Length: 127
Image 1 (cartoon, helix red, strand yellow):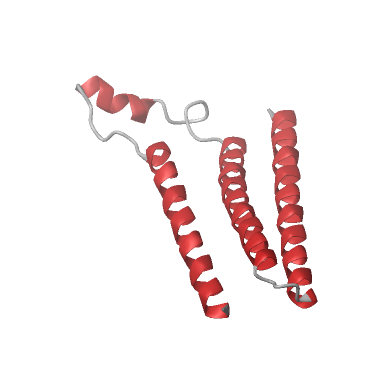
Image 2 (cartoon, helix red, strand yellow):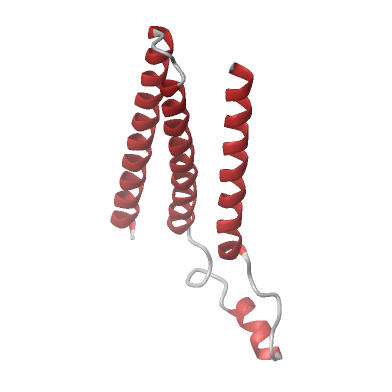
């Protein structure tokens, strides 16, 4: 039964990771062509203090991506907790383990949300 649970967990993690990477791909893709010489040099001329990626924007992007992955991990752990609870067959140790998994997943999600709110607040005060 433990081997089946491990295989199921691995499958769920792989599927969620695949969908996560697929959803991030359009945001990371940049067009690599230009219509004229002017279009090709606009990006070079616009870099600097006003056109470049600023540190607050970079921190905001990183925290958003991390919050996305923490959310995915929390949902996976909540599903695993439910699976452990359903398959516990009344064993008090298994039920307690499932409850602890659920509590830790929810606490992790809440901490990640508060961390993102704090980072957004601080960045808002800096700009």
